[in-house]
Amino acid sequence: MKTQLRQAIEAALKDCYAAGELSSGEVPAEIQLEVPKNPEHGDFATNLAMTLAKPERKAPRQIAELLVVRLQENPLCDRVEIAGPGFINFRLAAQCWYAVLDQVMEQGAAYGKLDIGQGRRIQVEFVSANPTGPLHIGHGRGAVVGDALASVLEAAGYAVQREYYVNDAGNQVQTLGRSILLRLRELQGEQIDFPEDGYQAEYVTEVAAKLRAAKGELRDFSEAEAIEFCARFGVAEILQWIETDLEEFGIRFDNWYSEKSLYDRHMVDQQLANLERKGLTFKQDDALWLRTTEFGDDKDRVLIKSDGSYTYFASDVAYHMEKFDRGFDRVIDVWGADHHGYIPRMKAMLTGLGHPSEDLEVLLIQMVNLLRDGQPFIMGKRSGNFITLREVIDEVGRDACRFFFLIRRCDSQLDFDLELAKQQNSDNPVYYVQYAHARVCSINRNAVEAGIAQPQQGQIDYSRLTLPEELALAKLLARFPESLSGAALNYEPHRIVFYLQDLAAQFHSYYNRQRVLVDDPEVSKARLYLVNSVRIVLANALKILGVSAPEQM
Image (tube, rainbow, N blue to C red; front, side, top):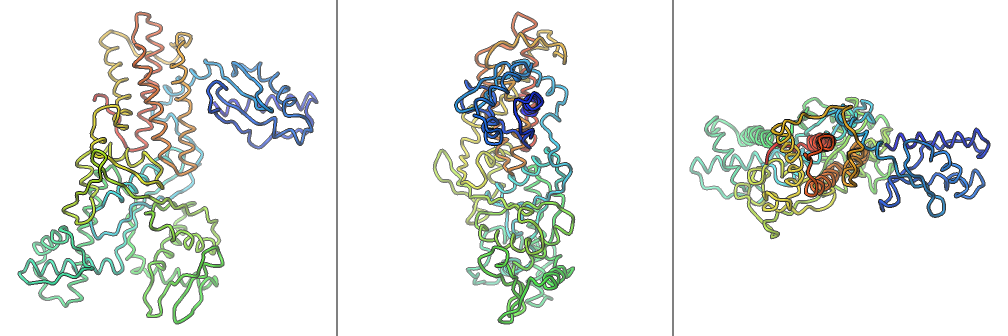
């Protein structure tokens, strides 16, 4: 609708130039249109007259008056008015909004999809939890944000790859291997003084028991060989848990990328040599450093320590360099909020290599506070000191879990109330949205029982839709593509949740006040067409979030 209105404004402006009423002859690259906060001010407003005042050397209201004369004649507009110093407010004709219903019906599952991405390649890397333990609820929030963002970008016309970076190299993996080996020895009857820095939780013993059943007691291994074997066995076992949990959470990755493979393929050395050839590294105190201060970081960063060991930053640098070597136009990482300080050095590295800093986007995920009836809740006996994602999914279900994780901006803390997520009433936001879809399906079943056929495109007399609530629903349906566009361009999948809540609230309000199937068959057909357009958009938006659209509840 904004596009059509912009075209009408451009045509009016060109007419003013052709008539000599305005002189600059330049149509702005983009005419700003906003939705007024007060609905009484119309559907859209533009400040165009004020932006043209200086080049035209006229008062904004004079320019607005010239434009309004022409725009009032456009069939798109029901009313065009000048407000304040020169704002132009538009109220569009109801028929224009109701025409959106035909678009929804015609496009079906494709309604709302865009081509703003034009097939550009984007990689979204998310979760990437260390394979040293089960996923916890913090990982779950990052998983849903990453997956929903990838779906939003796909719906907006980007070619998206979902990737999980497996941190299967480094000290934490060796610590896992040592912890499993000690638990294995405990299972063999040895008395073990378990170290404080080992992985303490019960799952380590589970892995040790499975290893013993599969491979025996590793008596022919040296200490170093046994630790390495336990580490590899443990990583493989825990990754299987992670993959299973994520699949049951509705998340599948296109690629699982091993950090260890970077070293096995000598990619770290190759990429660091590339940085050295570009003059981006230097040696000091027997260590290799990256010149990140030259590109906005607060200090230079160590890549190889004085003892010859690699820092985590070295493999991260090589990994991100290789991402762009694979041809991605943009890379999005979803990290925990505690990685905030890591962003400047990564952007500095890419800037040094000639990439615009915006080619890397990092979303930070704030913590989740788990509540029961509003009070802090702790479970997680199996995992020790954290709550597993599996426990939460088992208690409240996939749909509620995904919806709740997306109900706030990802960079704000989230209170997740388990009891609220299980309620079957309007207090539960996911139930409230899904119930709107189920209600339309119930109306359709009632229509079948009453012998009322589903109306087809071109059969609707929109003049039968006379209620303000009906027009409000049509306007909301028209704004779904714009909501999707905003979510994609700003990397904010929570916008789709906000949109769904608005649409569900508007629909429930209408449903509670009006009957859809009434004695007048033409009114029934028009209302049935309207609510089924709502059903389609609800289903489309829920699908993007990975949440089901049930037909009965």
